[in-house]
Amino acid sequence: MAAEPYDVIVVGSGAGGGMSAYHLTRSGLKVLMLEAGRNYDPVTETPMYNIPAEAPLRGVSTPDKPFGFYDATVDGGWEVPNEPYTVAEDSQPFIWWRPRMLGGRTNHWGRISLRFGPLDFKPRSRDGLGYDWPITYDDLAPWYDRVEKLIGVTGAGPPLGLTNTPDSPPGCLLESPPPRAFELFYAKGFEAMGIPVAPMHGAVLTGEVEQMEGRNTCVFATPCGRGCSIGANFQSTTVLIPPALATKNLAIVTNALVYQVDLDAAGKAKGVTYVDRVTGQHRSATARAIVLAAGSGETARILLNSKSAKFPDGLCNAHGMVGRYLMDSTGLNVTGQFPALEGLPPTNDDGMSVSHTYVPWWGYDRHAELGFPRGYHIEIGGGRGMPSMGVARLLGDDETSVGDALRDRLRQRYGSLISFNGRGEMIPNDDCYCELDPDVKDKWGIPVLRFHWKWGEAETRQASHMVTTFLEVIDRLGGTPVGEVERDGRKAISKGGEMIHEVGTARMGASETDSVVNQYGQAWAVPNLFVTDGAVLVSSPDKNPTLSILALAWRSSDHLATLAKRGEL
Image 1 (cartoon, rainbow, N blue to C red):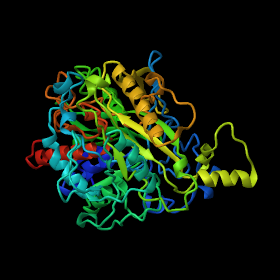
Image 2: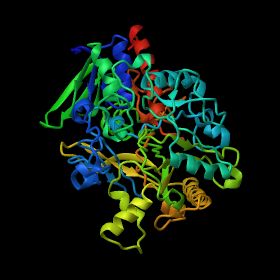
Image 3: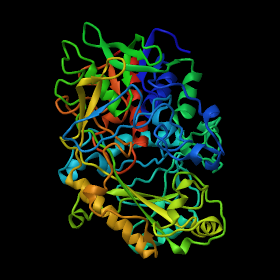
């Protein structure tokens, strides 16, 4: 384990922090990783093969386990004891997910790994909305290649040639598992509408790759959201942190809630101050460079709380950019019940817990007729996997039965539900941001975040289009919607933060007047301070952000390592 003096302190251990530690330690730098949550070992803590019937309440969601009993998240969720946040009175709803565990959200996430496309980096140049990135797709493409080869991503096959849905070069992707019966079924509906269906890119090993020694191929038996004791899916705790520790250049301190970046007399970052969440003691650590990768919200909170005579409004906030342009993915769900899928013989539909196929956005050249800019992709769930308490949705509200009659109906209809889940792009706006609450503090006296949120008309119209699309495909396949369906996008759209894709708050740019960091995540105001999490994203494309966070973090860490070797820190 690395010992003081440290070259770099990395705050956070998820996608951005894990990748930063991985590259920096392998570059020979001594790294201290500070994680606000507890230690977590998926090898020993993952409940592999356990079925819902073996869990309390058959595994359903509870306040302390919002995604069910088996979900990997420990000590975190929408609410974290002793660590509140607030939402402004005039704001639309916003909820903030925090994992509070080693590896962060990479233990719990859906493993969907889609590259941003060329249009995603220059949205303003295309339609005049939002902001352009200071980099292009070609700048990040080599880092996407490296990440896909390192973590293992499915989706190999003939080039699709779809607009703004990049094909990876040969050798980057693993074989895709074949579509399951319900995926072949729903594809017919979309194809009849002229909408493409594509293999999903999922961060799950379906074959052996040289860089993945010590990991095993997926056995299609345990949902990825539980974590993975055999290392088949990607999570920082099995793929990034172990090789970093193996270099002997990494030290990890857990339950270390960082709340301040410390500066020296010259205005350079010299370290951080944190509170031990168990003992309540406040401690400091020093290093030649600091990497913030605590997540968009927490990174903004650290910067805003790092006040000094030089930065009275928070570190790197002279132009009021910290906390601004907070974004999340749009989202909503419509579920259909399909008689064509009733009464089928029992089959093993486990496969990857990630969808084997999905629907990429198809309307890039149709925005004028659609009535909204940007777009969304569709993630589809279904099949005949291990049942949970959700099986009750198979019965209509007007149906009553008990005993054998109830069991027969459930068996007849089991596997006949398909859920259609839209995930779309949000355009950044001036009404979505976070700031320090002037009155509320956490248990340790640290000011908490106050969120402001408002969906724009572009997003609510997009949500309406999602509902219309899902209802049409359900109808084409002879199904009926389950429950009441809200068609008004203003009411149907997800809450801010609900998709757990919040990004922005410390975006990169070409000038310090309208951004916090440069194209390498390096702070304009403090050159030995870097941000390598989702806070640096300039836009929030419909593609899930984790793969891009990993690629950006690797690129930024490589730049940091180069500066360190030159003695420029």
